[in-house]
Length: 147
Image (cartoon, rainbow, N blue to C red; front, top):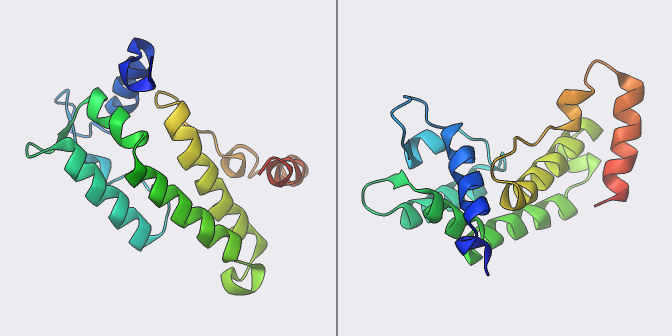
């Protein structure tokens, strides 16, 4: 059974989409979803949202099944891969600071996490440990070990 036909995965997609239903009408549109900072890269985000529009169809409403198809599509893969390539080519010199590089890697991890856990909110180590430098440093080390 593929994840697209997995009942629990579709329920998780539905739960995930509810977070972006800004006007609380029970439907998440592509326009509402555009409030998500997917990658933080204008060009890659634009490509991702454009592909999502194609999966959502003419009504612009994203169903759980359409969201599941999109998260597991070549289109989404292409965006993740483009961002991963950008991350691997970036350095402290191009981004200016270590936190900027870490934030970029964090967004990449969130994009991958979204696919396998559509109902969960990815908890960024940056946000989790921003007031605890010791925790953040150990998290950074663990984060880069795992990626």
